[in-house]
Length: 327
Length: 119
Image (cartoon, rainbow over the protein chains, first blue to last red):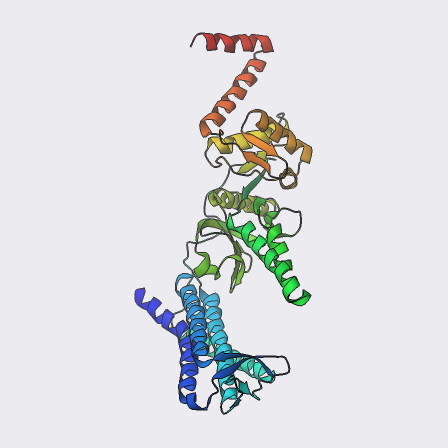
């Protein structure tokens, strides 16, 4: 088992490592032909409007590939991804690393033999937008390669015991009895983040205008609406609502095949916190620990972290039994 | 917490909702500081009237199990222990039994007072 994990970790970390090594090798080879301040940020017309020193370029790239590569590796090894979801995940890592690696290399090459101005900034460097299209093409190729490589090794299979219909506890309901399960799922940091986003948006509004502030403000307001989330399980399915009737998130009972309660590792399984979408699963991650995991028709998973999830899952299974009995 | 109501039962729906919360506190599924669902949310979920839910919440407030605060909604009080919730359940059972026996309010209160005076 350990050895399998090592193989998988190597497989998924490889493209990130390759992209970083390519970048560092290019930097070393062309060191004498590169300007002191590399053109690193470009406007839509391809002209440079941001510069960074060679050392910082190397440090930033090393951090970028190390952090994203580590997260992707953790996800593959500990994230409980099986079958096609596992293959898509590996392919996604290859595509991501391929895209970024290509862009970074292309930016470096565009800087080769560029003139310097008095501050050492690169002159006359351009990075046309079609380079992004090429990078997308590279991403598709790299993703395809990742898909093939993932399929060559042993693809992890779903353990047979999890989330099958008919398993797990039930709640005995009398004829005609209506049941609902409700639980607050909030966390102390949710309102703080919402507040920070809105405050940041207001600051941006004054510093750099509407265009930059609106996305941040919208996100802040959306998060504020969900600052005190409530999870409800009833005859309609799973509903996660905020303080107002809308917006809310609902998975209809018709789409749920089975439910179970288990510990969830948000970082490994969902790549972080918040509303997360991953290959073969989606979910609302508010904290680590127990939560309801529902298996949907078509094999996808929907999860939400919430206390007393065993009762919620048991009621879901009871309601699913009722629905099946009616048909 | 698990809410269950039986529309065919003779017990008023508001009482059934209050009983659900009492049971959740008694079983330890809900601890002090926990927020109850907004009355509107719970009413939608169970398919009952908002006022029915509020009647249930009002009952729990009078028993000291929850606090109703404007803006914060219904919150389980610090004094709401499983022990206390079980006591409240038993008190309601005693009252129901007394009614079944045809006892008047005064007769029951006299019995309770006698028990209090002769510990």
